[in-house]
Image 1 (spheres, helix red, strand yellow):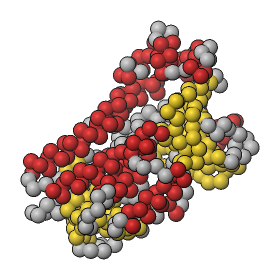
Image 2 (tube, one colour):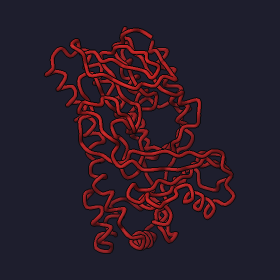
Image 3 (cartoon, helix red, strand yellow):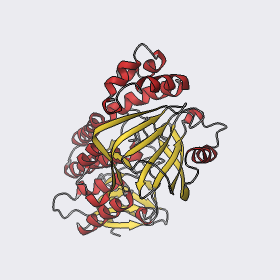
Image 4 (cartoon, helix red, strand yellow):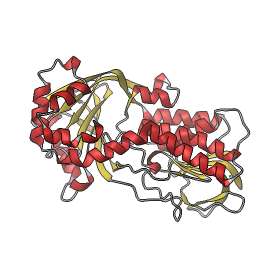
Length: 388
């Protein structure tokens, strides 16, 4: 490794990789280093791999080989077993995230980016008198960088001591499996609600093709006490997919909250989970990571040209504003809704699903869901008030 770089990107997930794609989008002689403590694409990635088509295609040029399946419907299952199917004309994808990340890393390497895998960053210093920051690894090695992009994940403490480091908001546990011999439609994702299924959260079934599926549960932070999430998942599997054969198991935490706080300082930009970019309700984060990573890459290029504190401050504010307008504002509304939704009793979801079953499932829309709920299910509508 060199003693100094123009840009160092910490984290080779979707956010860090897309930041690199934007940094290297124009032919240049910039020195760029991408670091990760693991090699993400050499192991199964703990992710359901579902995302919306529009956001994905907005964030980067999509390679068709990354797409496992095209999803046209979402099926919501209420606690009593009633279900409502919502068809999205824009459709969504189940992707092969490992292949996407491996391909993006290969593209960055071909553009001259140095990639260091198996290196854990333990500290990023405050800027020195020349504006550079020192990046220190767990093996004691250190080097300077004019700009650092932190895409290191949800428990990042990089930038500690500055007004950009905080504990993750609303960190929630998730547990899931990849299994085969699962009978589920390959053009639909299934979501299951209910306090007995996943208190404060939900269970999901996402197809992967050829009879395989990603099946998991996320539990709300305020409902974790006394809950054995692995046991909940096993009960769910036994009840609904008794013939499923488990291939692999995963567990982890998802940063599901959002507050509007600083996510950029001169020479240090946070994106992806490090910036709490995950959707608070759906807990989706791939598209959010790609979008915030792209914005961070653009901001990093601008910082290399900045010559005054005033310009640096404007770049930081512009980056934060761009993220807020793209995803932050709706995420803030969803974060306000989340607590109220978790308190809605199962009976309200049951009655709402039963009422919506009377509508032709091909014509179910968000407008119809709100329209039929208004007046009939006041507790549910009250929980959703910030979205109306």
